[in-house]
Length: 216
Image (cartoon, rainbow, N blue to C red; front, side, top):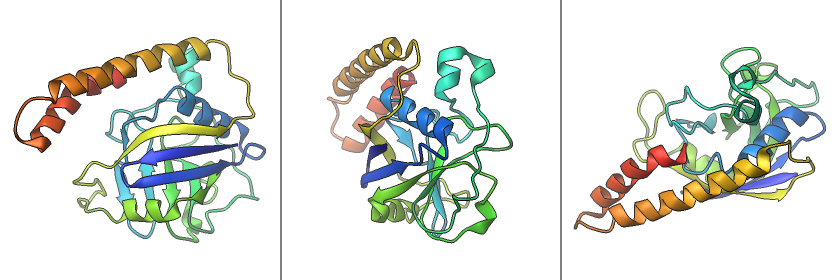
């Protein structure tokens, strides 16, 4: 019941609360299986508080749950799972980043300090950082603007499922294969379009501009 996030600054291992937050845990695991989070930015960093990611658009307003991917727009979000046994009382708490009741999609945040009681009962806690808390703290301290958006892109590069107790819902396997093929094609495009030019930053930006539409 755990996932490894490979980020630009290092690895983070998250243990999931599959008994206390089964819907959120299943959603996170299956999105990881779809490689939905690959290349997602940490678009909100707050030193001494939290880091936020999980939006493939990188804007902080996008993303949907695995249920929405499988069953359509009416299932884009799912309900909160609030447990008195889970509190934002220490660093490394992993929660859904919702913007209101029943608006859990794909975005999540990781606390880097605690306790943070103002977050309790407002957000679904579904995991705890088991390894790599120092990486999360480092991400929270990158140079950012007044809204917490980093000036330097820090991304989830890859996700690896270490243990998944949930059966795959119908249709997930086909979508996994389809997304994997599309991402392999995007990687090939990135290599091709970023191969020319003398400025490595400009080459990387050009490659990113070409491939971003391919990995949605």
